[in-house]
Length: 518
Image 1 (cartoon, one colour):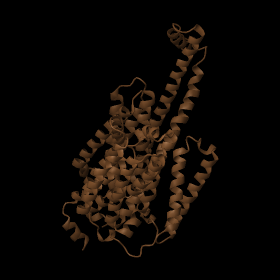
Image 2 (tube, rainbow, N blue to C red; image 1 turned 135 degrees about the horizontal axis):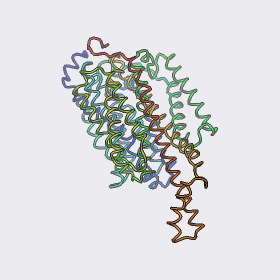
Image 3 (cartoon, rainbow, N blue to C red; image 1 turned 180 degrees about the vertical axis):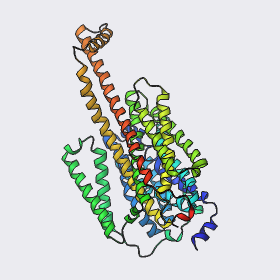
Image 4 (cartoon, rainbow, N blue to C red; image 1 turned 90 degrees about the vertical axis):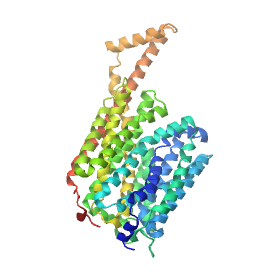
């Protein structure tokens, strides 16, 4: 059966979006939903906060290894079969996560969940791109973009609410009905075009797989633990970084030389795909890094609880939803590159406004910049995905989406790690600069110490009250040092968004259907 006959048989491509969007939503949501529940899990398993971080890390490592292998698995099993198996494994693993009674069982279940989830996002994206005509892919990507932008934003909100009102296992149990529905809909509405069906004689690239595992596992450990270990001052970080670098080089060399490779790197010869992927890597780094530090800022300096800090991210979701509606209504009337530039401008503006925060802010001071950030993310993410695949053939989609999502995951890991270092080192830098003003020769310092001391002298002797007053001033200094570090981080995000903006002028804007490779 030809592609045209298959397309005629499945007249409504939106039906195939139902299982793919459900699957993609589950995968992206689970990347962030557990963040706010980690302290509760650590308590349940009687482990430290550091040990509980492996609940997140194991999921990211497992999914990261599977993502670039999506095209290979699709050839071995057939894409629909692999997609169905992935949903089944993800759903069963979610049940096991909720039932886990030890940290070892939890990590094992999360690894299985990552293995199952690794194929969901690339295949969902590939199916949605293929099932729509090139002129209609913008609408498909607006729906897909809404999922991948909103899911990580509302993840902490849902996780915080479930943890506070029920118990943490339910953040995994909610995947079960969604997974069952996705399996049922996949069987009915998803089909395999000829190039996505099971192929005979597909060889296993064992060497490439080995290098891929070494690269991603060592890299993820370095990025997760590097800041706490003082980076390259720790010998084991140096050794792991060396292993990661050598493994990455060896992996890419093996993929270039091996004709039966896991991924086809020749796809990077397409300039739209290369530039679009670079832009998305930076955007993913900004998104995940900002999602990580804004709740941290609100909890550590503003006194918000887990649910309130997660709820503060909701305006981003509303902004992304607004962008999706606008893009769906007017996207085809504008040059996609212009929309990306406008979106990056909104992201930069929102981040710069967050860089003007202080400890006396109102809810609006958080809400509006977040809305602007979400609006920019939606306006830029949707067209950049469409543009990056605009000049690829349909049979390149699965490989392209897998490779792109792998690099985006790495970009997000780098962004989260870098911002953690910016916060900790920045706080130390600002503390060193501010503490020079805590001197007996400073009238402001003396006046503030006396003010605090007078409040304590009612219950303590003068010397104790004086020391307690100094302690209160030092506590304020530490708050300001941490605040300045957060401000610096948000401004770095703004600069990063502006730096990648000129790359838009290197992209080709393909509008006409006959200009796109089929």
